[in-house]
Image (cartoon, rainbow, N blue to C red):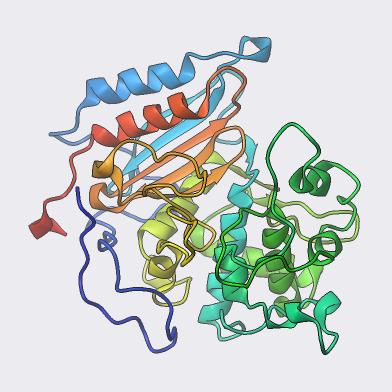
Length: 379
């Protein structure tokens, strides 16, 4: 299905934020309460292929790794604001916390969206990293937008292959004690804004921007609780910090499956929750618009898009019929997927000891395909 574009101007509070808005984001259905306290539950509606959902979920829970546990540890399907399918592996339940891995990048992105709404950050302001403040330093011109789009041109990309990569050193090796200093203390390789490169270090720098904007580590914890967790009813979210006290906003946040689903629903509902704006107006459309770089096909502003990849990016899940999908993604198969034209959130958490990315993506796509897309006159 082709991407449907409609002409809309973004709010004046967000100048030059994004291209015209994408497929409209669906509102919370009338009569379905917001899951601030508890998720509403129900059966799939008529027209949904229940057998296909059950078969796809069975397949995702079939691969087993160490301890004979299913690789998939938690799976939730939310349709029209209700949980219509859920399953946990033995030993896991709604109280279990799951590590984000790179889904933490999107948590950091959410905090930026709150700060922009509050007028405490602008995406086109300099990132303000202390290490870059010498007058002739070319990195002084790097902006929050560059960080969000991963188009900084910095030599801190994660890297690939079997050797020790920058990302591996940052998370597990000699650079891990102070991730902000390590991610900042690199050269500029390319003109900012022209080249996309996936970089956990860039997300650590963005998390530092957030931390400085709110006044430090203690203030950050209060900010996360008061401005994101409490309004959504999130009770299990725990951020991690390195030895220097830096928020590991590129890699390490823990939360239960239902709380990850709450974050997904927030994005699917355009950044507002039960009548209360959480993100800046237009933030989600900006987030789900592709970063402008020739080698980028499917990365937005710290969110992934289900479009054609470029430059070695992962293949998309399913075919063009699912191209409205955008999602949080993390290592070992962590996914929170939002599909606007189906009013759908799918959460998959766990490991990848036996399953692979292709099989996992196909399984999520099969679940999504069991739900009919809204017709154009229903959007």
